[in-house]
Image 1 (cartoon, rainbow, N blue to C red):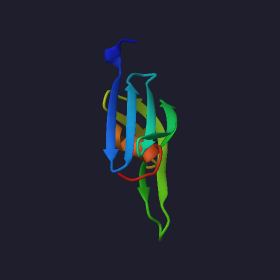
Image 2: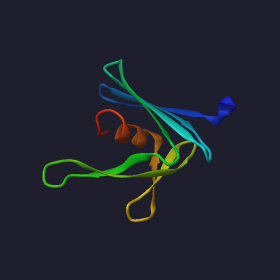
Image 3: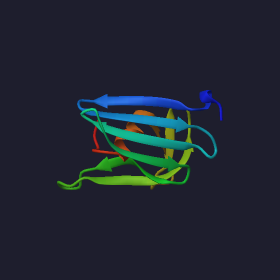
Image 4: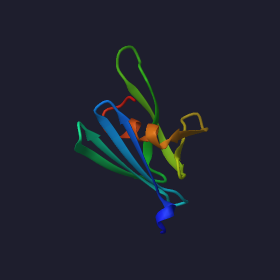
Length: 105
């Protein structure tokens, strides 16, 4: 793997920071790191085929998630199979906050 084969995206929202490292390709991988108030909190790896959240809902006062398998990992996005059979492409930033640490942008 060459250094230009991976992409690192950082997303900051208040005291929360997400660092998403994407390694695109058929056997692609994503590593999401979560920090709060500057302190490391959690790290979670994903690969093609892994289950991840692509959307959420509020069924009468409690949050729920729509999840599906990761079908591809690009340089800036992660694509998941939806429950309806289609695909949902998430930017790296959204994939990070949806799948590690406290949800919500």
